[in-house]
Image 1 (tube, rainbow over the protein chains, first blue to last red):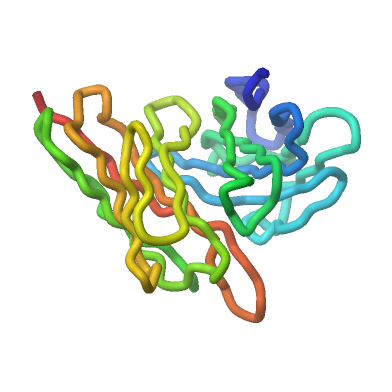
Image 2: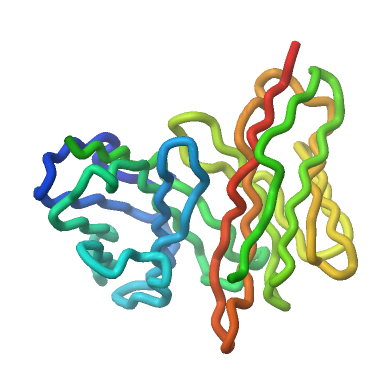
Length: 118
Length: 113
């Protein structure tokens, strides 16, 4: 059973371009979470999705950022018109069930996508 | 604003027991407390999870007092390979019936030979 897959692992974009980050959850998991980690900082929750629905996007910046988790295919985190401050590691996690956290919905993390904005 | 608090860093010698505490005053009533370990350039990895009292697995113990406003991760006899950042994750009541997943800022553990 493959773990959470993220691609690309490294992404370089110039200011103003778009960045698309993909996350394939573990088999049997229908809950996906996106986190951002700035250099030398902790993880910050961005958004929580359950197939085709955004459940909680309280951590998402109001502009330029969007996320989706279609019925078929991976979850996508999209950043439009990237700026240097968007440079960070973006982690995706998946769980079998959703919050509140319990013994049934441990989050499994992917290896992350490191976005560098030039 | 609901938040969790952890020490920024800790040092320990090999073979010692390490205790890392996370405070989470606004933890949601039904929520578990989960701890993760993260090595550089990798995603966080699950260590242990609990709701109350004490939980033990093959790598760690988790102590949670009755009021659940804090939790302590205990690593017995640490080795150099335990050098990593440790995070607590809880869901907190952020007011008006809303719920927010919150990671602590992480504790950087350095194990010294």
